[in-house]
Each structure stands twice: as structure tokens, then as C-alpha cells.
Length: 75
Image (cartoon, rainbow, N blue to C red; front, side):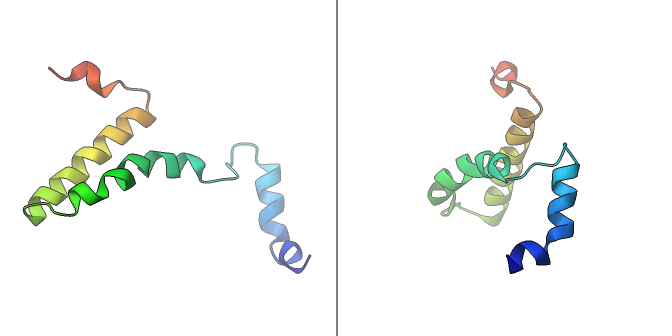
């Protein structure tokens, strides 16, 4: 009860605004592929290579979140 009363304003805001998401499941699912493959990327040959991998994965995940089929545009 103390916890609920302490954050009452926050809880009311979340319940009153219908567009707010109550969990972070979408964010967790978005990074799942990165987490699964991190052992593979742990041993990148260089910092630049690791950075490039991160940029590419970010672009791919962003495309997925925006409804784009990233495989459609590859040869």
C-alpha cells in the first residue's frame, strides 16, 4: 500500500492516458536478437567493426518497428 500511495500520481497519469504502455515488452522484444547474438559480436575484430554492427542492427530493428520489410530491399 505504501508503494501505491507513494506513486499515486504516476499511476493515475498512466491510467488516465490511454496511449501510454504499461510494460516494456516491446522494447525487450526489439533487442532480443541483439542479446541472443551478443556472444558472436563480443569478439569483433575491431572497435569500428563492432560499431558498424551496432549501427546496422539498429537500422534493421528501426525498419521492423516501422513496418518495413528489410529483406525486400536486399539482393
